[in-house]
Amino acid sequence: MDQARFMRGDKVRREVLGSEYVDRANKSADDFNQPLANYSTEMCWGEVWANEDLPRKTRSFLNIAMLSILNRPTELKTHLRGALRNGATKAELRAVLMQVAVYAGLPIAVDSFRVAREVLNEHKE
Image (tube, rainbow, N blue to C red; front, top):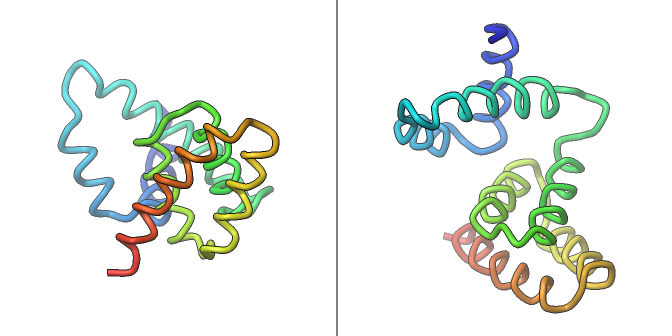
């Protein structure tokens, strides 16, 4: 493992998802899934998310669309929260999910809107 890339990844992950989320995820790691957690932090966050060729908000929008299409509601919630931390607005999130509706189908969009509503309701509090 490249320690510098891992540390960069930890920093970016905390900035996007929040330290509370990252700390909770780190506590849940065990000897079985720790290699996956390390890989995710190093490569996903330390390599791809740390790359500045795309703004973070754009990366959030891409993830929201892909996770919607892949029907991954748990990760979708995480990345909706991250998008809000990255400055996304309710209108922008709605626009991304409408794009999903047109290109991936209404059933996917209906479920994704439902998940997004939950996150937006949490965010108000």
